[in-house]
Length: 229
Image (tube, rainbow, N blue to C red; front, side, top):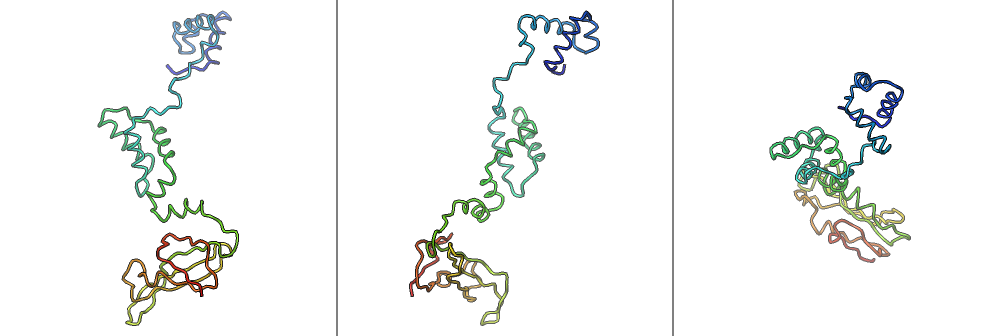
């Protein structure tokens, strides 16, 4: 029998108070006469008894820990699967292990609770994680030359080297964090086009400047140096 609201129960009890027999109320409402009499007795003893008591485990997740781990592992796959797919797979796992299968809403809640940083790291890689999360905590400079930013990038152009072979050059650029002015840059040697990263002598540019920064912020600090002219 479907759970009846408190308002519905009170309405049925008032019908009986108005003289309608329990049998007729039972026929019209679909609630057994025995249940109606039990509601009436409970209501006379305590009007609040018609309310369904709150569950003692309300707000607590009842899904088995191993199934939660399975949901989280599936949610971190790349490409990211749909919640419906995760629910089907976890239901199969639960059936194979003799565990109660979680509901779709429970699976969705677990998926939505996965840490965004962990999800980005697992599905998009280190670079996307750093760009989205680490830069939020970047220190802001308050004056020129207090902090410089430096990084490498592989240019989307193809040039010919001295031997006539085509290659994509690496660009190393340094910016002043306060003014965003370019304090120095260099291109990698085309002789090292077969490397996935530029060699040390061309990736560790000696940026000539009349001043030096207080701090140099880069993902690969050991590749950079600065000399005062």
